[in-house]
Length: 148
Image (cartoon, rainbow, N blue to C red; front, side, top):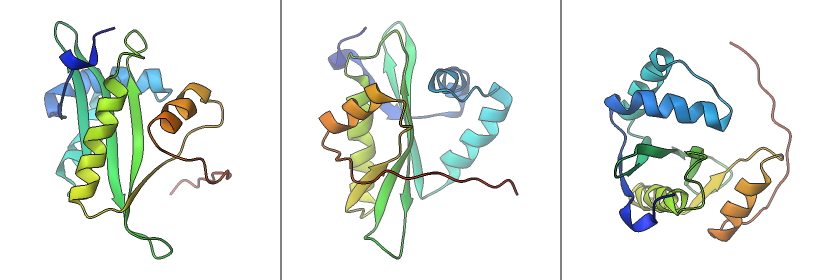
């Protein structure tokens, strides 16, 4: 696990797709690189979202975060963490916190006044991570999906 001082946070690039796809599998969303490439291109081209990666010397990309602006009628402008994962072999080394800081800085530049995240009820370690980083648990809900 690299010390966070050696981890560099930067914007994701198209050539990060293999690592991003691998890490997506660790998050529970296995995605072939070809499919991830299409998704990543869309995210990189969108003005209302950003993707940052954590790169460690000698290890390459060890984590990523995807954040987007969610303009809503019922609350002030906010950003949402759509996904955050750090390689299971390097978790606890500070990369996740650095990724979150980069997303928060980006969100402030987008004139957001808050940031939110949704996390599966089973991800207790993730819940503790977000609480340590200043998030508060404010709602429990059910999620619904309908294919189009």
